[in-house]
Image (cartoon, rainbow, N blue to C red; front, side):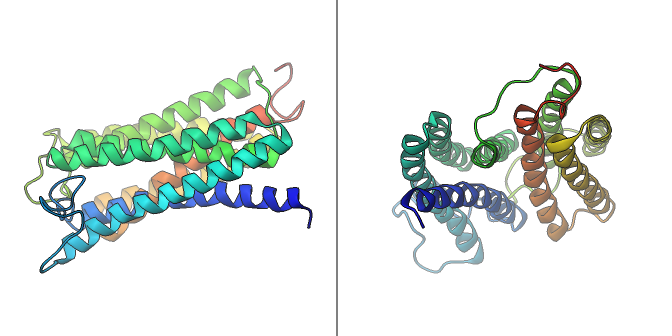
Length: 296
């Protein structure tokens, strides 16, 4: 194997590791909230007022919360590895876009940690908990862009109906996720028995969330019907994820939000963002005729 091939393989591995790890921390973050362990370490950056790690008789909440915090160091290590790999890759292939994306991914990790710390210091305020989750979605989206560009090379900007529809689909995905955090902030899984709720009506917010989900599925189906090639393949994946996520959402709502189903719903949220991001970048990489007639 040539040296440059070895470096390319490491770069692809780093990008996939970044995506996988950031999806995983969404799930472990959900586990912290769903087990009521959000204040297992009641302060930040220390776990207790006198130590960065739990000490004395540790209960399950401390283990869960501290374990989730420890994963931040794993994310940081992956981000550093991605940056180093991108440095060599971009120099060899003349791809500054890969290098810049690795920098953004690296900077996003401490940003996410700080938001998480502020969330703890403010007693798990529901709006900050939502922001903490959405920050992970930003990182997931960036990781998807990096993976796509490694697979398909530099991309070009396309204009036209399909591209506009893909952008709208991506934007509505963000609206769905944002409203989902509001529903969570009104619901019972606060992360701690003393954590505040946002005071909004759970039924009304759930209905709004469902309405926007239907809009998102409709947009994605339209995109699937109108597109071809890379964009259509990406839209098929997104529709499948949306339908599964929507079905799971309905089941969990009508079964009084069991923690296992809510945890899987959080995983589905991360996968939805990844799939929507893939649709968006697919429009930029599609070959002539794969977006829509006259789009260039």
